[in-house]
Length: 305
Ligand code: HEM
Figure 1 (cartoon, protein in one colour):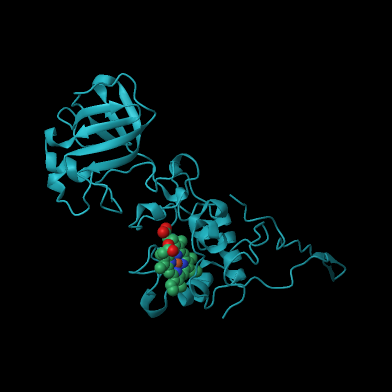
Figure 2 (cartoon, helix red, strand yellow):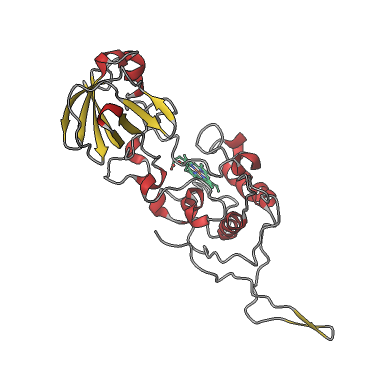
């Protein structure tokens, strides 16, 4: 993962006042930063680029909602690709942490990497699903066929029942088949395992590798849309300057340009939180002088249209 780079823009203006004469170093920037704070960047950059026609691109239509400055700030710490309907298109950086299969009688608590349904027909009524095959990490040891105290956990939340859970129908290394017909509340258990529904939302299974490329993204490169103080680790920023994260945004440049990318990166870099994790300075002036980000020429829109 490449870095957004170091400071070509670094404001190294040393203004020394000597007998009324200002002395400046020679590498002072030639341009005044375009946007003083996030409100200015929003009004002149985001609003005119992403939110035209009542926010047609990033309001109701495309995730995330960028049609107000509150919406933009609301993307802090929010997951990326959470509206993606084809799991294959989910970027590794946006894969959520895997739910865990827990079987207390066998002392098992392992990550669920993927899930495949049987019968596999896409159109099949959820009530007719009979089995789900889970690939687990690490492969469970000591698990035998017949256990029914199966449950799925996400942090402290328990899904897919416990004592009368889906029955372990077969075990083959990392692959475990659960029989959904035996589960107590079987329809809700089947719904929970229905990986055909994408995005899964909070009430269906979250597998660790939904795009199926063998990488559990949450264990390696996980990123929220905006990570406080970390433009490199912010998917929203990456989508503006790094096409390895998907088609570069914005789709149409309008007022967006290099300076907007830099302003956004410096704003993210300068964000701070209090002890409770709440952002405390979102509306402060953007700290260009203390910002070492270099994004010039990396974006799709170098100059405004
Ligand atoms: C500076 C302005 C913009 C920013 C910062 C931005 C940012 C983003 C981000 C971060 C995503 C991925 C969201 C996710 O899946 O987590 C995205 C997706 C998308 N954006 Fe934008 N966008 C901008 C402008 C636009 C404009 C002007 C359009 C349409 C004309 C547009 C259309 C879309 C569409 C259709 C998607 C969903 C498909 C995809 O992820 O490639 N965006 N945008």
